[in-house]
Amino acid sequence: MNDKTVTTARRWMKRIASALLLSCALPAAHAADTQPYNAGMRMGAIAYRQVSMPVALTYPTRAEAVARDFGPFRMTVAAGAPAAQAPEAGWPVVFVSHGTGGNLFNHADLVAALARAGYVVVVLEHPGDNFRDRSLVTDKRYFSERPAQLLALLQAFLDREGSAGAAAGGLLGDLRLDPKRVSLIGHSAGGYTAAVVAGATGDVRRVTDHCAAHADGDEMCGMADPNWSVSAAQAGPRYRLAPDAAMPASSADPRVRAAVLLAPLTVPLQPDSLGALPSALMVVTATHDEVLAPRFHGLPWAALASRSSIEIEPRAGHFSFMTSVPAERRAMLGQAGTDPAGFDRAQFQRELAARIIGFLDRSTAP
Image (cartoon, rainbow, N blue to C red; front, side, top):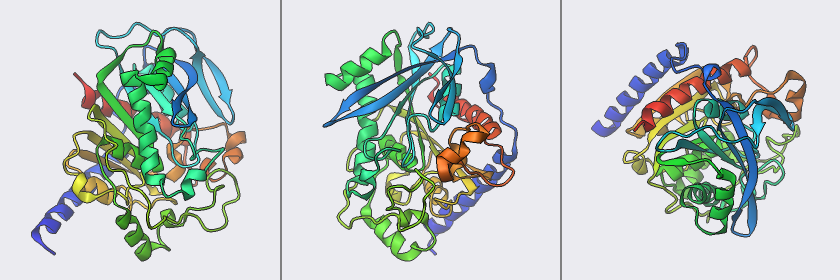
């Protein structure tokens, strides 16, 4: 073991020790349920290549919000309401990438809390990797296409160019964004997606080598069933990465100031791209993650990124980072509706939102 490896290992263990203390502490950030705003919502779509990419825009408003159902998910929002008066520089903005097989409302609790705290939140539904269509999962472009989609969303809303920019401008309407306070949040495959747009790069050999060694220990190495994490039927082989899979060469946007990675898929990321990341990073892993084992995903990655903080959540599982749903609707989500025994997802979501808001406030402050 060389000196560099020893130093990295020591730094990693220090971060893990600090993270264990943090994860057991009460959240110190401003509470998500005492914010001065309500959450407004507008829905639409922007053009992306030959498809239309669904988008949900959530933002601060003074209008009255009411509970609304979106399939199994529930949000308290003011649909189509006028925005509250923006700060002089505009609203800070967060772009959200859901996990594989997800949708616009996977993180409804967190998104609404961010809007109540004074953030504009833009969520995309990934073409080819959502609850209706998972054709991209078996496509060799998977690891390049996801970041390209998130980058296109960011550019549409910040640059307002072309038809996608026009559609984004129509959704924004009276909302002004602060281009100096841009953040990303990603869960699972969305964590990988957000990391790349924050500045990381990938290498297909890392995935093929990893899966050759850990095929039986890492669920990522088996994802190929298009129904996986979408329906209750989970049997069968899962993922097989094409040997000529494309990896992103340049999907970073230098305007990204901070990124939050929740139970992230990180094996494909090149270690030498992490130390120079300009963005502040918050990585949250779950001890009981049954999909992306923290020892392979999240922990080693965070240890190498110089501006990262890591939190290890000892109570949660992989899907605990998704929004809470009424008890009678959990079965509709299949495996994504399950948590470790005794876990209170709704309470965890409130605590998590407070920690994330505090991190974004600190990391993107003028």
